[in-house]
Image 1 (cartoon, rainbow, N blue to C red):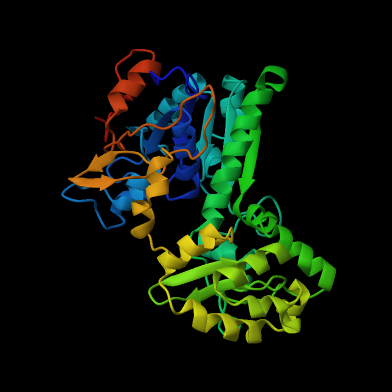
Image 2 (cartoon, helix red, strand yellow; image 1 turned 30 degrees about the vertical axis):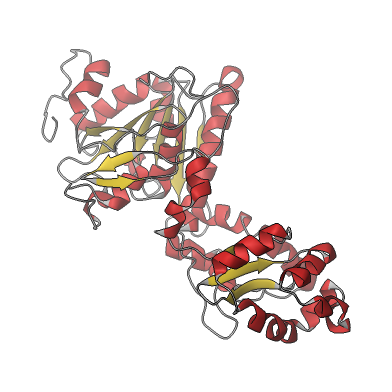
Length: 396
């Protein structure tokens, strides 16, 4: 169990029967909040992401696995065997939460479904992450690409004259992981009154819910939300422009901000131009507006514009890559980065990016080796205290 008594979920035990991204992301957040997360992995191979290269430095840990499994305890169990299933049932009997993201019905086939485990532990919050809630698609396999395509987000991503594009972040997986954490914490909060319960978290329906304003515009117009690259259909200027070095993202959302933008780029004449007087005018003449702004923005670097726009109170920022963002001085000073080191390489992962006035979160804790904690964890729950299922295969 965690030693940090001021962590919000200190004392909560989570059995993590997930792999890849959506489930491990959810259990990683729970670990950052102080839960004791026990990661159950297949003997010999473990989580699929242990084999997805590249590895970090001179270690055998992949960047993929390290990003999603810090601070967990790893237990090797063959859930398809009687011994492995019995050990998992013992773990679940001692746990507050179980999270799984197998295809629907798999845990039931192993005798480890929600009804079975909650019969033995009525206080258990059993969280299942899947592609779809019950319906025509229920049994279809679902990866992030699939739900992004089906859920509408891919259709609104990319240039207007280009094909749909997959957003660079796996938002289908991350969306499900976030909803899983919300569901688990909500169920824990309600447990004193209602006992444990089974919560089902879908990738597809969750991602559709993230359409929010995009859906609102669709309902209002009866038309699909347009694909416009970095531009916005209802605001202008609101897009990325090339700078002398790098690119600058400019987001003008009010008339006052527009006047400040004109002053920042030393083009006060644009504020008086009838083509650009109101936001509606600027949206109507967005290409003419871009043609006026582009030469001015090309005169300085993106970092220089970041400073200038900041001085004028205009929302704008340089477009940073995934190396540059971790060198950002604000990110470091905000206290959200870990100081984890693996294989001689620094991995400054963002820990739980929320602060609490009376609680602690995060902590630079390494991801576990496969089966590193099998004996330790099973000794806590098996009747004979041996730390091994009776077959012992694949356990350390």
